[in-house]
Length: 286
Image (tube, rainbow, N blue to C red):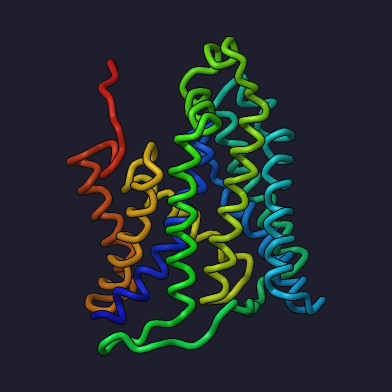
């Protein structure tokens, strides 16, 4: 049981990171980004190229990959999202779906679909009671928790408050001097960095290919929905819970039903609390 829970927490931490990236964009621009995981996949492949064929130091490669991710987020927001979102959020959402297929096709054309290993920063494990805990799992959980705490602090800062405000009302913050384009760039850049970290950590515990991100985007949305799209901490807890539930069901029921059962749990939660476990909901007239 302990081994299953540790593996579930490691898996759930990757889900949580993708959920945090989605929440970050949604809090700033109110656009659900279906291309979020693919935007993290492209820099992750650049990290693999730097570490593998070019033989760079892992930490240097990851640092450069995250820098590329930040720039990529800004480019996507400026070139594809901002011209559309001012007219229709629905059109911007469809644009992110198109970007999902575009980026995935680029990755598949350039690197193919063969699975590639990605070096982990630490290897080995230690025993905790009767449970073997891999160091990779500790790194993934700690990194996810640190990013969650960092985002909680950020959204309480003046810049974070401004970012949340423009998602709800574009006119008043602009009149108060808030620079909307700057906030949008920061949000999309930061979210792409978090997404890249999620993909890299997932690839280090499994493999890296053009399919790595597809599971992450689905589970990221499920985790964010479970915890509440308006809550950073909720998205993190939702990701951890989803990972643990999937692992428990996969080990004690069947692997085929793991995803189905986790989705049923989400449906049950939303029936009772539509805004998610930690979300702040409101009543809207229809």
